Image (cartoon, rainbow, N blue to C red; front, side, top):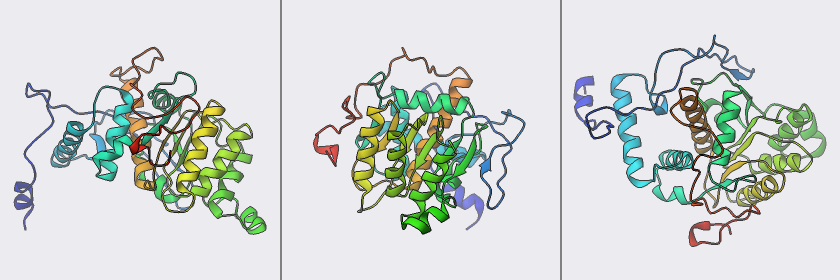
Length: 302
């Protein structure tokens, strides 16, 4: 099949506002590089001028596909608040419209779903580190639209893991926490429940990430770890974005983190406001003020 034949099979729709004007979220590009064994950083000379659409598309056809995909998601998920953007990203990352009901936004100060989105975007604008649990999540975080260093925990704490028998991911989180890495950082856990549990312990002991994004997946301790993180985060004033149920994973965590970066880029360009008095949300995330889960049927692990 030729390229032209393949192109003919692709959707013709493009995003628009009803007047023929294409709608595209724009972020800025930085020159990034990754050295094996070293933290991924965006060490370019600062935001550039090249625009790109969501999902990392850069060619015209790729951007049309990306825009069409997100337009279809917006037909299924509300598009009214910044928290809705995270719900949309969750649906896009999982391919499941029901996932919009499984996200939980822990908002200790304001009680609205947008608080952790604002906190994450402000951390990105402040060029705070993005710290992931494993390499897969780190690799999924875009290098464009921000100048944050992107580090992974795994690979640290080998001696602690060997001495105690704890998992390598838990040991790596504890090791980085000893160095103060998580304070004011965007802390991301996409794979390992034991990493999420270790992060919760660190928060109880005084660590204060700017925001936590945690979607560890699986049948053993995944729900428990996210539930504990929500309650600890709420008790200690740490905004968090998590989900209920057994599902989750690295792709979801990276997608949610990337959307925080996109929100930050839009705030930099004056397209959205991060002011605390802006309209937040309607509580659709199902989060109680104490960090517990709303006991609705879609609550999963209430």
